[in-house]
Every structure is written in structure tokens, then in C-alpha cells.
Amino acid sequence: MSHTSSESLGRITTETIRQRKGQGERISCLTAYDYPTARIIDEADIDVILVGDSLANTVLGYEHTLPVTLEEMIHHAKAVRRAVKHALLVGDMPFGSYHTSLDQGRESAIRYVKEAGVEAVKVEGGVKRADLVRALVDIEIPVLGHIGLTPQSYLQMGGYKVQGKTVGAAQALIADAMALESAGAFAIVLEGIPLEIARLITEKVGIPTIGIGAGVGCDGQILVVNDLLGLSFGKRAKFVREYVDLKSVMTSAVKQYKTDVENGDFPNDSESYHLSDEIASKLRKARMGRIA
Image (cartoon, rainbow, N blue to C red; front, side, top):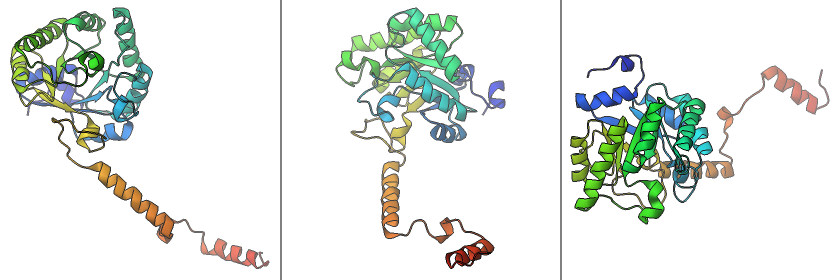
């Protein structure tokens, strides 16, 4: 496999990701929200780590992504930043952090870069977000686009529904992708759209596409790490592949711990600290009133 100079220095950049499309190399992406998970993902050589606004429902317990704030996103992105040495780190712009004006979007993105150390931001929306993407690129902040099923449009869409199922809807998605490319996005997430449409978009644009529920025809794939690890609750989306059931593993471990505590089996002697024989002897004498 060929590597760019940035990769030889141990870091993936937005330019690295752009070049992958021309080189025909698939791009691997995962979300992360904390230091230990991010460190494991980074050391496994994943290309892109996204601090996704899925933080809202996977970690913070919100019903959907809309309530999560920029402050919460930055707080978690800081923890991820401390762990990541290799992957490209992208911060998700949460709902309400760029919707009122271009100035608000610029200010939010600048905070993300300066306070959390992200190397790019992700913005949901196509044609209607092109001006924002252009404005961010103009101030030297790389942008990862996101079209199709955009969770921040949950209320308007009436739920999480597959997008692009009609000819008109498919044409709109293609227009969205081309607008994002023209505005300067370095790559585009395609979520919840038919495989055929995702493949067509991937062929039409010159920047990489990252699929999630968009089939194998994209230039790369992303999953929410909690889904991959079996740490999610509720119904699993069709496109999720659960690689391990950590929820069951953790439940079993916690139950065994409870049993061991109740039975007096934890901690055992080897898990306890001991005094030296000399000090232990003096304490025994002290209890008998004969300490020296």
C-alpha cells in the first residue's frame, strides 16, 4: 500500500482521505466519545475518528441527537483528542450550533478547533449548507459533509427514514453531493440511502463518500462504535453489524462481581495489601498490651 508523507509521520490528514479515492483504497471510520475507546480505535489504525453527535443518545442518554450542546461535544472531543495520535479527528457540529447564521457556524467551528483540537468538522445538509461549508473552508477549517438521513432533521423527516427512494429524491441527493463538493468539502457521509443511489453519487463526485446504511459502493464506511461493540439499547438498525456483544460480557462480569462480594470471595488474599512480618508482629503484641 502506498502512503502519503503525512501517513509516514503517523498522522492521517484531510488530504490523505481525499487521495484515498484516487488510489482506490477504502476508508475506515468510527465514532468515539471518550479517551479509552478512542485510544483503542486509534491504535487499531482506523483512518477517521468522529466525535459524533450520536454522543447524545449513545452516551448521555438523550432520546435523540437534538438536545446535545456544543459544550458537551467539545468536552468529549477534548478527551478523544488526548487519545488520538494517528487518525483524522472530526468533530460533529451539533444541532443549533450553526443554524442561525454563517457567523454562528464560523464561531462554533473555531471553538471546536481551538478548544478541542479537532482537525475538521462535520455538517449535516447539502445544497442548503453549501454556503456554510464554503464559509468554513474559507477560514481554513476542513468540512466533512453529511447528506441522506440526517439525524438533526429528525423532526422534519418524521423519524429515521431511508432517503432517496424516488427519482426526484435521488436527484436531490445527487445535487446535494455536488453542491458540497463545489463548496469545498473534503468528503461526504451518505446515510440511510439505497445502495444504487450511493454508488451513483460516489461515481459522480470527485471526493470520497463515507457510507452508513448506504451499501458497499461508497469509498469508505462509518459506524457508531457502541453499535459495533454491542453496547446500544433498543432496536438495532438494519445496516449495523455487531462484531461483539460487550453488553452481555459486561453484564456477566458485573453479576459475578456482585456474587463474589456477597460471598466474601472478593477481594482474596492475593488482592489485599499486607504488612511486613515485623510490623505485623508488633501489632499483634500491641493488641496484647506488650508493644515495644
